[in-house]
Length: 77
Image 1 (cartoon, rainbow, N blue to C red):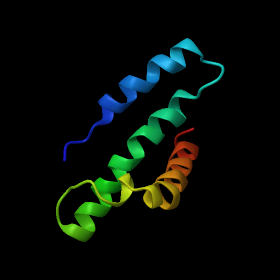
Image 2: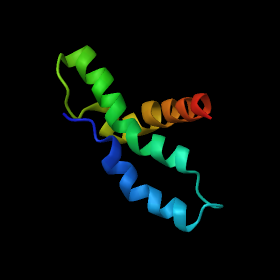
Image 3: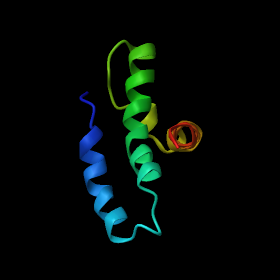
Image 4: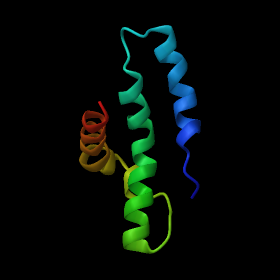
């Protein structure tokens, strides 16, 4: 699975340019990348290859992507 870093953020960043006081570009960019980052890290460790897995499920978003995204945004800011 290729990393989709610029693809997801390309859809979000025009919103932050239009309404910069309402949306945080860093938080939206990290949030858009979290499912792919989680699937890349966990998929390789547990399955031995990259695939869409836990990070793209609803429970994975709530239990993994959201807390990890908050932590990563906090560390980057």
